Length: 177
Image 1 (cartoon, helix red, strand yellow):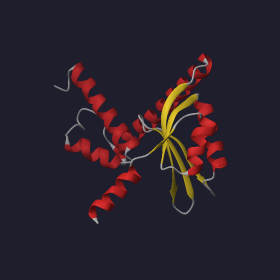
Image 2 (image 1 turned 45 degrees about the vertical axis):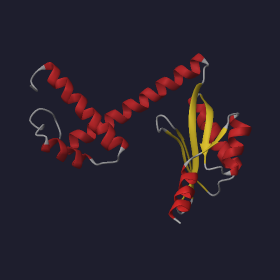
Image 3 (image 1 turned 120 degrees about the vertical axis):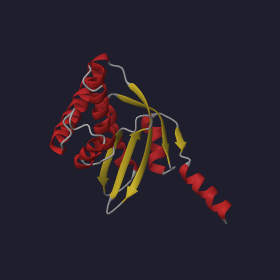
Image 4 (image 1 turned 90 degrees about the vertical axis):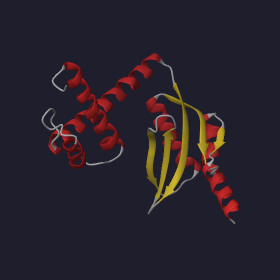
């Protein structure tokens, strides 16, 4: 089965998909992926050593970045902006981390360590990336933080939409009390 052209194409697709989903998106190491492919007994048909998978992961990363740059340049050349539906929030570790992502794709546009989460900080981070990527925000979902609401309404010129997470948590607390 694997010796046919169709079988080889399917195996390549399986390996690319596994490396993309599990390693690039999921953070699983190539040693673990190699173990997975060995359990499927595919090592006789495709290169599934950790080093081969690392080379493939690196090549996929390069191609993704190459594609991103290509799309960006086409967007800039055409003068059109891509509309996105975004979400923004702050995460607190040792420092504040500003996070903004495109909701449908999960693409993280902003992930920035900062000293504060004030409007001006959000403004500078968001404007730069949106301009660089040629994107316009259609609406911005957030936890209703004042700086993010102001960013949506004042700078991005889009509606600010409340996320459902905090409301659902409050409902859970009320129902469980």
